[in-house]
Image (cartoon, rainbow, N blue to C red; front, top):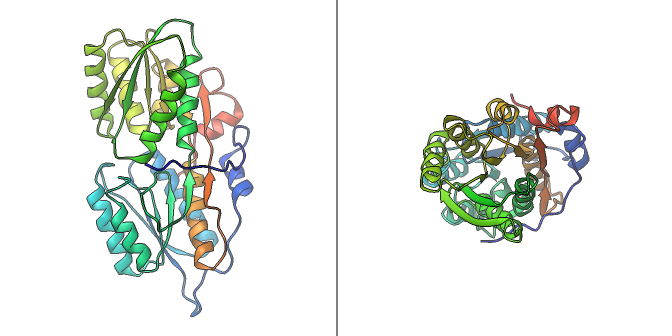
Length: 328
C-alpha cells in the first residue's frame, strides 16, 4: 500500500478552519466550458452520515459556489461498501461528470472503477483515503502516518505507568486506517513503557466498535490504553468505556470531533482527540478539480494537517474553532 509523502501546508492549530483555506488555496480560473456550460464535478465519499462527511460536503459546496460549478455529493451508507462506491463512480461517468473527487473505501477494490473513469477523461482527485490508481492527479488530506505518530505521543503523554495497549481500527483495506496504525505502532513500540499491543478491526459503525471494544476489554482486562482511528470507532470506544466505568482506568486517544465525542473528552471517557480538517479536504478537493479542468497546475499532495485536543486545551479559542467544524 502506497504511503502519501505529504507537503505540509502550514498549521491550523491557532487559526479557524476558514483561515487554512486562505493559506492553502490557489484559486481557480474560469469554471465554465468553452460553450459557457458549468463544469461538472462528482464527489464520492466513503459515507455521508457522520459529522466528518457533513463537513467535507460543506467545504466542497463552498468551493462549488465560489467557482460556479455543478457538483454532486454521494457515498454508501456503510464505509466498507466499495461495491456501491464503484457503482456511484460508474454512474458519475455516465452522467457526464468531468472530474471525480473521491475518498476511497478500499485501496485496491476501488482501483479499477477509478482507472476506468480516468480513461474516460475524468480528472481524478483523492481526498482523505487513497486508491491504488495511476489516474490520480492530486491527493489532499491528512498525513495519516504522521497522525498515527501524533496519536502515539498523545497516548504516552500521561502518567508513567506500564501500558497494555489496545488498538481499535476499522477496515483493513482502507488506506488511511492502515497508515495511521503504521505510524502509531512505529512510535509506540519504541517506548519501554509498552508491555504489549492487542489489535482488533471492526466495521466502521458506533455499535460495532462498542461491541468490539467491550469484547476486547473482557478478553484482555489488563488493557489500560486504547487508540482508535476514525469518528465512528471513536464513539464506539467511548461508549464502551463509559458503559464499563473505565474512564479513570483507561487512557483513550481517538480521532475526529463531533458533539458527542467532544462531550466524552470533557467527561473523561476520551483523553485526547486527533482532529482533522474535513472542511478543507472538501473545499480543496473541489478547487483542485476545478483547476485541472481549466488546465491549471495542482499540487500532487496537500496535507490538510491535524491537531491534538485535550481537556487541558479544549476551551482555548483556537481549539473551539477546530472542534466545532463547518457544516451545511
